[in-house]
Length: 125
Image: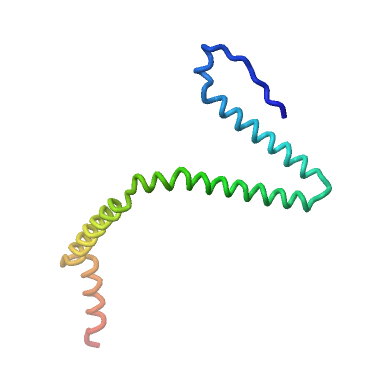
């Protein structure tokens, strides 16, 4: 497919600044779809399977490369795991203390159930 350059007035360039990249990506996707359709129409189906596998592998490698180049340096630079572990440790401790205090109460559901079990098990028959 042939890419056409349009002359845009300087006053309108600010309005469509991010739109150009979006359109270029869309045109590239349309070009890939065109080639995939053309390849699917070929009688050599085995080459299509190979091409499809290679396309999927290329996309996987690109996504992996994107993750490694963007996310990993960000995680290394702004590591929050220590703070998160400390926050959840404090949260778990407070939750455990709250549960224990609720269970220890004489009129708690846990104590009532234990009392009923004990009375059923050791009553005179």
